[in-house]
Length: 122
Image (tube, rainbow, N blue to C red; front, side):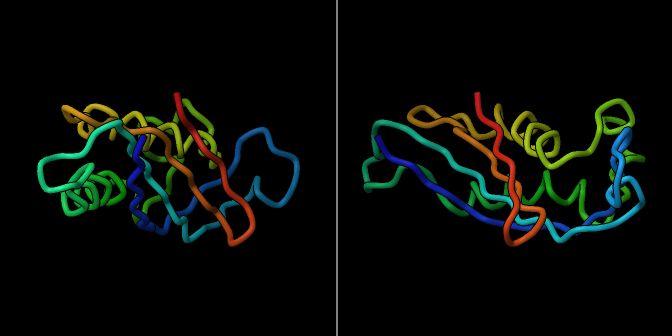
């Protein structure tokens, strides 16, 4: 089994609904996002997938979140914009776009700080 990982980031603000503490107030993060794809085989030149395509696809999704107030986006009006839910949102957006003949999206990890992250996978 092979894995390929790309890392990107976005900046956004959010406030956690029904949370008792500082994160209930509007605040922001510089989120780091790790996307991992996996597959059993390599292509004829020895690659699992093209990193350029992988990065580009991730960037398109993160551009929709970058410098936004996440609570105001349609998805997060119903879903609390926690790091866990942000990871699932990104996973769901990328899943079909990053499905190749020999690989698929495996997991998304969202870091809201240097020491705190959440991962979503199926």
